[in-house]
Image 1 (cartoon, rainbow, N blue to C red):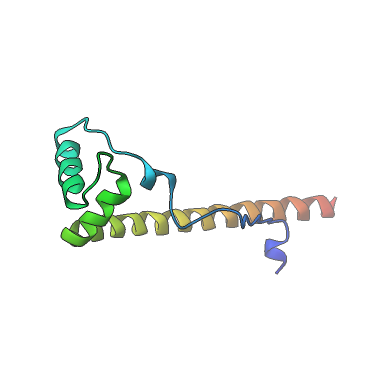
Image 2: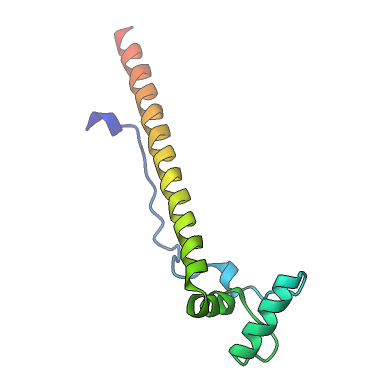
Length: 107
């Protein structure tokens, strides 16, 4: 596998993948839709005032799963496309380095 000889990966085991910071954010009422969602979710989940993004996601998942599925599908497609782009770029970089090494060895 000389093709990947110069490629280095760094794994970061300390990254938590379970919940993002955004899910814990309190949602403000700065638009009609947010106002409606915050009020509805606050009543539904018997919140004492603050409604987080996570609470809205949970409620929408239960009551409007088609919407959440559409968001998830779009997110998956974009992530898959980005992965393919990254793989292609990595291959081009690897091939360029291999060509550079070969030309240096010929000299």
